[in-house]
Image 1 (cartoon, rainbow, N blue to C red):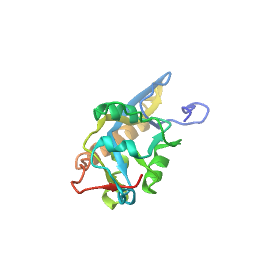
Image 2: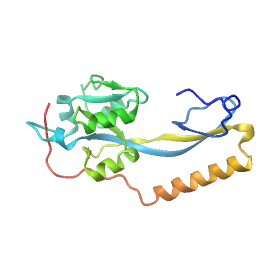
Image 3: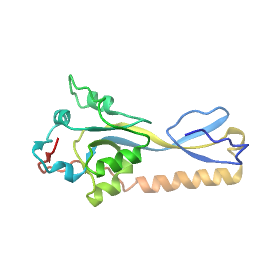
Length: 183
């Protein structure tokens, strides 16, 4: 997404994906989360097992154009001779998650963004291996405006709300039941 034009668009504060430094702005990362593979329970009802990360070789991997992390996850999981680049690409992580929910393949999900899907059983976490937490949201304002009372008040409120939300939330770990997957 294009950075905001604070002066031209009359925008005072923006919430942006990642923590990209923008000229003359104050960028404060406020939300990070690990990433891990998830899939629909429907994908797990088939003739092929999905018990270890190596079994992913037999499945479609779904990719996010903005921040695809499959190569990093494969390294983190210790998989050798595994090329995770094949599979459909989507413009946004939300589209990747919806494709996974529709049993089109396995997604590499930002944990905080799939919490409700995991709790509702729409998606299942597959393995214990996480990519390290990555900043997914930052609050951005022009550096010269950052101490304006309403901007400071909004920023402080947002940071408190996120801290309060994070306190009781821990990403669910993989369940121990056996998984079968259709390739």
